[in-house]
Amino acid sequence: MAAYVVQRLALAVATVLAATFLTYVLLRLVPGEPAQVILTRVFLQDQTAAVSQQDVAAIADRFGLNAPLIVQYGRWLAGAVTGDLGTSIRTGRSVALELGWRLSATGLIALLATLLALLLTFAAITLKRSFPSRATARGFELLAVGSIALPSFFLGVALIILFALRLDWLPVSGFDSWAHVVLPVAVLALGQFGFNAILLDDTLGEALAAPHIATARAKGLDERAILFGHALPNAIIPLIPYLALQFAFLIGGVVIVERLFAIPGLGAYLADALDSHDGPAFLGAIGVVALAVALANLAADLAITRLDPRIRLRRGAT
Image 1 (cartoon, rainbow, N blue to C red):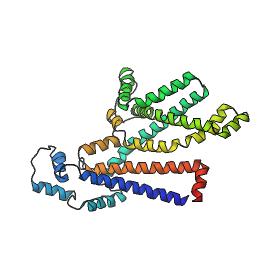
Image 2: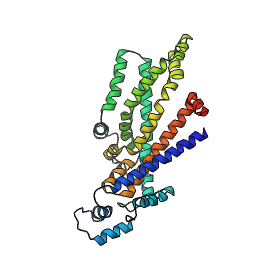
Image 3: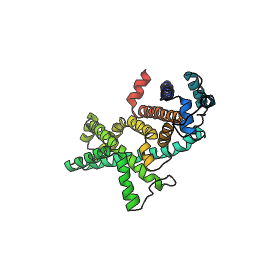
Image 4: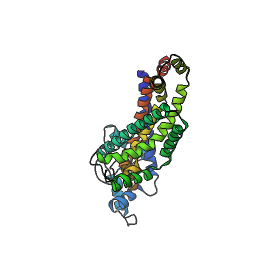
């Protein structure tokens, strides 16, 4: 088990290194000399401004852009290992500090959205299995497919109009209280619910068709006990890797929702950094997202190993 954890940790480190290095290379492939882009877009805020070569050279020296690409990345990586992700060109503040409080906002929303989506999924599955009928199955399918089909922007606007503007129950935007969290969490949770429900319903159907379920029914066990005690624990296992990736995606992929509700999160930070050619900020954010994905995959693998004895035995044999 320890060897497996070390192997997965090494893979996580390799994932972060590959993601950040490729991002660093791609940033250098953006049209225009990096020093000139920084000078005109960030400092002068005028892309058509005439600049001298001396000014461009000064910017290049200031940000270490004259060194070879691999040397520049090595410097950034050496700092990142110690927690120094550089200084944002756009704001002049530490990237690590900016990412810290922005990640806390995005992480809270992502965690609450994942938990709410799971709660809705289990509730829908329970209703469908407890009251089996054609109407219940059709209603389940409509809810799941509708959740997937509705764009998050449209759903967010609809919830704002209903709960913020018409009913005046919740604030429209901001991140100053728990009330500000309700609408963005609801939008993201409803978007996840459809995928979770369809996947869990499929795996639950396979689990209920297993031979030991027939044996349990032959012994006279209650259907609810069979569902929650025997079938559901096995059906959840294939859902765990998907939930881990889903949570990691929410960490860096909630740009639309954060923009819509004016939330100072990681997704908005990524978009702003890319728009302003803020290399240190964008690279630091990508590193955080890559680390979140790697750690989520590691947590999912460890959870599956703990829940499924067959995987433990197979890995122990190797």
